[in-house]
Length: 361
Ligand SMILES: Nc1ncnc2c1ncn2[C@@H]1O[C@H](COP(=O)(O)OP(=O)(O)O)[C@@H](O)[C@H]1O
Ligand SMILES: [Mg+2]
Image (cartoon, rainbow, N blue to C red; front, side, top):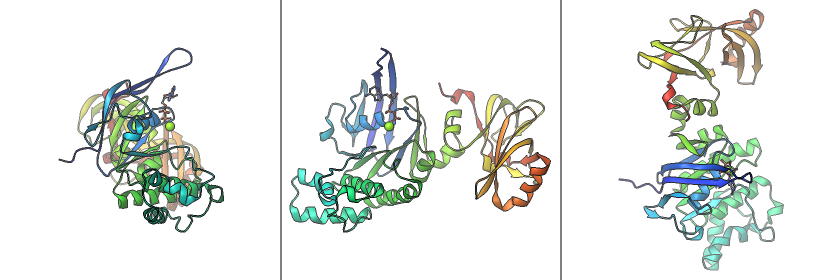
């Protein structure tokens, strides 16, 4: 019933390089963005995130494919005629204008009257936590405050669709985390569809209703943060999102044989053929837990990171293994440091299998 607010069909874009070659920035991307959702495009630098966002806003012209917004074909429409607002990666406020004037800019262009402008500026600034700062100049604000002005300026026109290109990446960690929560709340309150770009997987997991993981101009997986984390479709997604232990091997019923007589138990149904088992570091437990399968490792290093210990080691075959042990188990960690041998156990239900046919092409 609910028609998607943005639809991309076979969206393709290639850029020429100075050496006379070409880079595929968008490889025939199909995507449906749901109304009022917070959708994040996540991927490493150069994977096509900005190009995809700018194809939606109209600043990048597609080589092939179509873009629909609210069911209307936008492919040939210039940016200013699309119902979209963008917060760019390098937000630029007008330095000679006050915060109020910067925020009101779009309304002034649209010919909105002075009193309504004043009210809407006040409301927008309140929403981003800059109440009463109308009279300041950008240089009198911190980086985080300037970024909020850029946001207020983008939301004041009440767009149906807001595109945000790494809007938080210039901020320091504490402010970034605070802004993540604020932005998510704001999006919820305003009922605007957000398409948000980041290369930070933690940010993507924290904020999004759904995440599209991109690599090489393709969407590798589009799913909820939990499914992306728990059930990645291929090795790229498994390693890009979160820390991971990947064990390649041959399936034999409920076991994955990883060589040297070692097996990883799983509960995804008996099967055969090649597969990779994913076990997240926090799924490993220390010592024997009744009835749980085990994995023995030689310890290489223990790193204390505050809330937990990170154990780095390898199996007898030399496969690297990382385990995260809660700091509350510090007594046991002391013993391990002495013996250098660790028996880890894990719940087979927490083992996720990746089959090769789902691999990155
Ligand atoms: N205007 C352009 N001219 C040439 N190459 C470009 C241009 N814009 C982007 N690219 C290339 O396309 C690929 C995707 O870029 P981009 O979408 O900016 O990636 P991201 O935002 O994920 O870092 C990169 O290899 C980049 O170098
Ligand atoms: Mg970019």
